[in-house]
Image 1 (cartoon, rainbow, N blue to C red):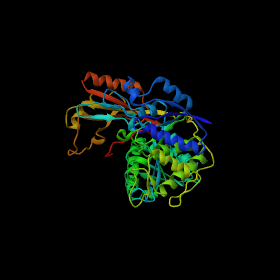
Image 2: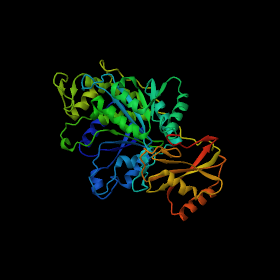
Image 3: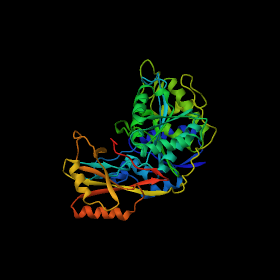
Image 4: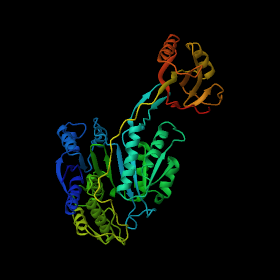
Length: 478
């Protein structure tokens, strides 16, 4: 028996949660529920995160959280509960299945059945941004080896449990060779541990086009945070059934399961809402905790119900549907089909009552790290990089030399093009003349000299090698 935390949420939340719990308990789910209150009432009671401290304690104790949609009030500094939950509980993996339900839901892709596994904590979504000059702001893209290993391994373990045949990685490592390059490298390393599962890699722009045009070529997709956010919305949209989708947020200790749709307050309490999205989240929950045969039974019953034309009003279509039902009636129809399998849709099969294996990350031995130079970013309102180079050459300590100036990543000195447009944000690279390791004292001396000459240094980035491998980007045009 697994104890789970349940939140019924706002709008249609309470009725779709009641329907979902009725179905999964009727199917034999071995769960015990403990309810907490989150959402609009909690926000308006003065809690800006929409959840009380005692509710956090319940979630942390039970580890598994099934949540109906909630309303975040506009304005007033209210924080998204979803974002807060993901960050506080370390929910590193967002999982979103996107399956077409043709011919009952209109779609141009009738055989689409993919799952997007998105890294959930880092990448550009770390939200670290700075304005550095009058004309330039930056956002830091953070990709870590632990983050890569956890999300890629989860994707392969998920594919293994769900009897899926292929895992595809999307990155843009032809441009971002360090960050996306690490993600791709880790994908290749972990893929070797699962020889029974096919693996492939696509550059994300080409991959996105293929998802939109021929999604049937994919099975499980894994990618960094930003790409995953975009691709999962594209995939959900082209299935034609966004309102029927569920998602999971998985961490090493805790996990949260939900529908991807909102609270629909205009139909709340009217027995109209379709509980399918939350039911799909609950099925993912059952798979996560190892009750896979119950999950399999419910999913096949749900598909059989859709095939029989028993539909709620959101997907009811004259000529395709047979019976229009409400929330409670739909739940009863799914319960009546428990034990049945679909005949038009492909019946699902999951691995036999095995929970997902999620080993915790183990830190690797430290590499040999050498300081090979420094990039100093300068706020300068001039336009001629040759003039800037002259100024910088006046402040260089003995043993260093100015090797390059770039502007927005494009080399403008030496041998730059006069046609290149430059902002007031300059990256100035200093390296030792003998290309050997340097110490940090020489960087401090360089910055001190810049201060004396009124050169506005706004940021430094040390340039390192790890185990003899250069670990920094080169400027475009080199």
